[in-house]
Picture 1 (cartoon, one colour):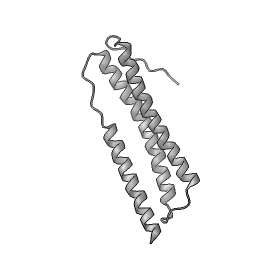
Picture 2 (cartoon, rainbow, N blue to C red; picture 1 turned 120 degrees about the horizontal axis):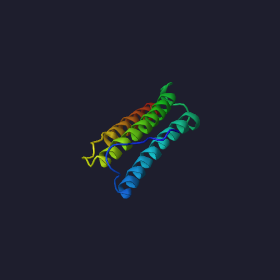
Picture 3 (cartoon, rainbow, N blue to C red; picture 1 turned 45 degrees about the vertical axis):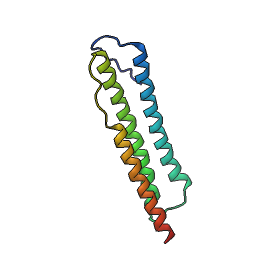
Picture 4 (cartoon, one colour; picture 1 turned 135 degrees about the vertical axis):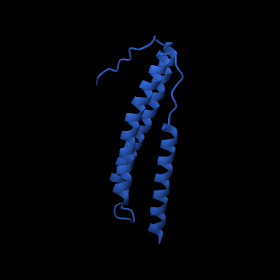
Length: 118
């Protein structure tokens, strides 16, 4: 894996750099959990009442994990650059986007569960 070097500005306090890295790792853990959830749905759950339901949910979870992993790297770079330039931290949409995704996925699963009881 290539090392990302940020060459602008001055070196920030190492504590802030490490805090930024811990936040990045938390996002990566969340991405891995989404991917693992997608694999579990595809391999361990019985078929849903909707024929494409299980594979659709698994695909969405894995895709969301991949998108989150890429977005977390980008966020880490933006924050690191802002700290080096002694600038305001950039806003992020990651928490809201992840919350919206989980909400939509939960509603979809609930609909499939209710259809299965009919």
